[in-house]
Amino acid sequence: MIRLMLAGALLFGSLEPAAAQTTLRVGDQKGNAQAVMEAAGVLKDVPYKIEWKEFPAAAPLLEALSAGAIETGLVGDAPFTFAAASGAPVKAIAAIRQTREGLAILVPETSPIRSFADLRGKKIATGRGSIGHQLILAALEKNGWAASDVQIAFLAPSDAKIAYTQGSVDAWSTWEPYVSQEEVLFKSRRIITSEGLTPGLSFQVARPDAIRDKRAELTDFIRRLTAARAWSLNNIDSYAATWGRLMNIPVAVPQNWLSRAKIRIAPIDDGVVADEQATIDLYFRWGLIKQKLDAAEIVDRSFADAIAKAGL
Image (cartoon, rainbow, N blue to C red; front, top):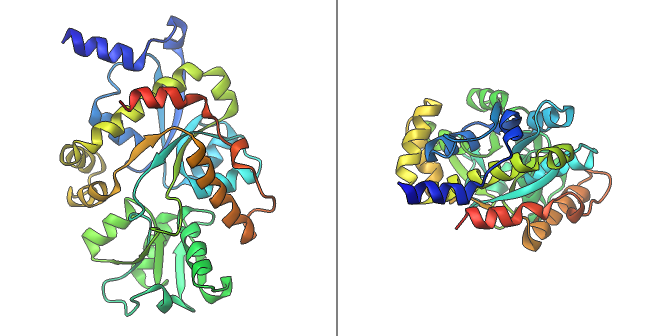
């Protein structure tokens, strides 16, 4: 027990007494950071208050961050790029790496569509500027198609789900846990994933003023999140069971998602910057952003040591 307490102290460090009175406002998406941190038990001794706010997708989370309603949150590389290009006060402070099988274009079980080639002229639902949008653009580019070769219906996940279920769209380009929910519960099929098409990056992002004023809290939070993700890789069954209870979703859904995702926190390094630059370049080529950003200028590498130590 003494060794465990010592290990925890070394891992998470200690904050100044005044910091115990502070609040870190954290944006999350369905079943992500808060769920894994609760399952891993890393939220029991946090020396400051975490105020969680859940969002259905990255776009509204980034809007809240830009407005100052939250200070940090988890988003995909595509919406992060969209926000940074619009001038939002946001920096990536940690990367989330995972396999790319959970970002996919889905069709219903009975759909005659069998490949991306069958989507010519068809209607695909996704969020504007989302990683689902990114996947469609990357697939169009790979196949030498124009934007007009498919019809994109820009919808929030809840509206996309309705349109997809009712047959108002032919396909849905989406991400986890929506992909696994559709596969497991409704027998949808993935006709294409982002493997070989997009970097598959997500980011923990933060406002620059939070990086300046709440560095200790952000560093501690990132350490705990990193440790929780490391725990989840070796405890998939336990995590899936806890996640299912928290989300009130059958355990087969998170089991499907987590067994193939292999989610881990990674420091912002040259590889991450290069992958983010690839996303920036894709969006610039397709006219979604009007200026070509330098990825190195919208990331913050100063949390790398904390991530490396917590991932041990």
